[in-house]
Length: 148
Image (cartoon, rainbow, N blue to C red; front, side, top):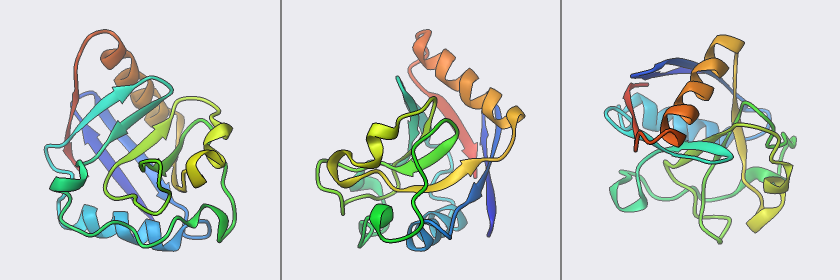
């Protein structure tokens, strides 16, 4: 799988995997998508990113074994890139990921770095990302993901 589509109640977002930067992470997310893990999940955060996924207790897989931020080609956390969310410990990412709303290059090193594994493919998709961010900022608690 080289790309994936997030179908939300506000439209679709097409993302392209970056196996050159994060092959283990891209495969991990691809496997979760193939098993319909994200069906009926939500985008629930909108500040400098929009974030989605399943909290660790609900994720059907173990955490990622490695944070690939510093092991491959580095892709910076800039507008339209998708990265794995994690706690303060860098090797604990799972199904949670976010899409950057702007340039967040401080995330490249913070807490061991937030590994970019995909990027939004086109302006139409980025418009949906912005619409999701605006809806959540405007008081809608969550935006439903209908499928990936």
